[in-house]
Image (cartoon, rainbow, N blue to C red):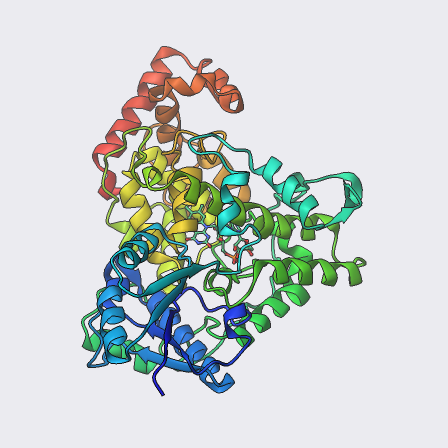
Length: 511
Ligand SMILES: Cc1cc2nc3c(=O)[nH]c(=O)nc-3n(C[C@H](O)[C@H](O)[C@H](O)COP(=O)(O)OP(=O)(O)OC[C@H]3O[C@@H](n4cnc5c(N)ncnc54)[C@H](O)[C@@H]3O)c2cc1C
Ligand code: SF4
């Protein structure tokens, strides 16, 4: 029997709970494609592509097991044109399709492509909400204003009230909205965190497929022991592990930096969330329910810290992305132009914090938020790296990287290239912060206490140089304190620091 309607499922739309799948209708065929269009738009970490393909195949199988009709084109399928719209055209003709339906893509480039495609179609077409985010796609403009600085905290309080999360009627449980101040500890000496929950799956076939088709990737993979969850069942498993083993320490150590452990108490559910194998609301509700039953061991600060990330930051970033695209992708507030040094792909640098954060990212396609923000991102901003280069690196390297969340985090929060739409100040620091939060500095060739001279930590002179050169920031109340410290240096000291920074920047590849 010919299908009448063709429904497209993109690689990050693996939401088994979507209302599309409630009823089995043989007039509907679901289509999914592994495509060069998607493997090649930026150079990805090898684990990222394998995780997506593996999760997509598992999802297609689950749909088939439920009784749905599915056409799945693997990368090496002879009918695969490697282009989204050409594949759609081909299947429309082949199966005499009469209507085309799709879920709103979360990335601007895909939305443009599909909206454009539908305009020229001579069959009916319709877009549906992905039923994933708390804020429906059509409601984004009710919460966010174009080109306007927004405060995450206000948004967070509003949605907490709206979705009744950690609320006691109209007041936050515990009387306080935010426990961030309690969540800034480094790991105590000798502290051994729980071992990370990993999956040991054989992905040799995927690795060979990418090699055979010469898909350009970077990073490492152990094909006999692939660690990431790629099904909903595995996603639920890693989340449950987080609740049982990590949540009680999540908030306290979420900012801690350690070179001993690549994973500490973070949830590592971002890939599962961003592919929609997990829903944010189920994660929030289950985490709250787990905390309610285990308040003897899990403090309010831990659960609030976790919920703020998923309910607050994640939805906030998505809203800002959509309201400001496509202009957002071109913003370069400081007009930074420098290329990213080669050690971002090799980890061969004397700066131990960068070395550790990059080498762990190459090995696992993962780094936690503070490694991304206050180590690699901090360095990129202080060194004046072009935001396009920063975006391409973060979009390629992390397992969870999709433009709607990567870009506002990178271009906005980390690089301040949007002039403050996301962040109320640039997230920069000298070695002081990195040294305070972990053990990178005590194993480094550079001296975190020195600003100039032999072995002076590059973060120090680059930090003061940045503030000196961006004097417009003097008006920003949140960093006035740093300027008052800088202003206490003598002209001679200032000159030596600036000279040190300029010499480091001239020799950036040698750092
Ligand atoms: C420069 C930079 C680039 C980033 N790129 C991405 C990206 O491509 N994809 C991505 O999902 N996150 C990105 N983040 C945000 C954050 O670092 C990751 O979500 C987090 O590290 C994922 O690990 P986890 O699942 O262990 O998170 P946890 O620390 O356990 O937090 C739980 C969940 O909260 C959400 N979350 C936490 N912080 C943020 C945030 N700032 N923005 C949005 N969601 C958040 C994530 O879904 C995460 O899975 C980026 C941050 C920075 C500074
Ligand atoms: S001394 Fe400087 S370069 Fe070395 S780890 Fe510390 S902050 Fe990084």
